[in-house]
Length: 383
Image (cartoon, rainbow, N blue to C red):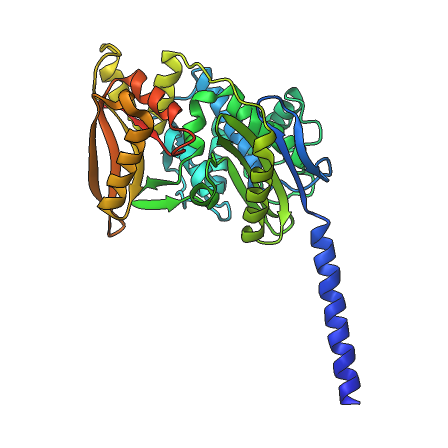
């Protein structure tokens, strides 16, 4: 009798896990599109609605980038933190009620930390309330042709009406890169410092998938593990979206496999031509205080006071190897550049930054553009 009960119990347990696994598998969907032509290179249930989780923050960032382009938001714009913003559940920065955060830090926190308190504060700053901001998000989705997407909040926290599709998220990712090409480097951020702490990106593919350009990860229990990313190699760029994976590891494996399979079939992209104003705006949001930007405004572009950072490493010999590798790739473009490995202390550990100095502003941006397929983390650094 005991053996019979045990067998029945094990059979019931296996049946339960089978049902749970099947239910979760039904949530999985994916798509790959050619970022140049918009052509679909792969799709699996790509038009079925899913919960976006923190992929919703891509639209929050789209709205924020529009505010920047229209001059209503600057890097040092103060975003006030309301009681509701401070009370948002994790992931969060832990902003205090009645404090403020600079718009530059807010953008970095949304991308790297996926901070829900920051998303709520940004929504209130732009629209007055998160509810009004969510309606704007949905309206913007319709304007952009994302007809299967509806937003109810700025962060992606669970709400039964907040849904999207893999196809719409891929389209949104492509539009972000197309509409704001000068902010491409921001999506590649692996870490940022705020209030004495260093926050590391949730997107592990930035370190593991050659050519990965970042974009956004997401997870809530109702959605599973989501990821939207651009991957660029040899002048070809694809957008990969995976929704509903059962673990971050399987999500990353799916994305990597889809990218490897699809990149050879993508069309070569046309190089984006950025204006001096666009370059200057992007540089200000990446790493320079507004005061530094103002101080430089009277100087010409020929000033050789810019640098590029091509990596940060735990060992100085690794940083030197990276400098040599980049110099081999760029050749005569770096004839007048001065290379250095700058040591810094971060969280009790020494890190060596591989940098080239003695560059003008246009040179710094041009060189990072040329290095996109070699080191996606190339960062122009102003004086």
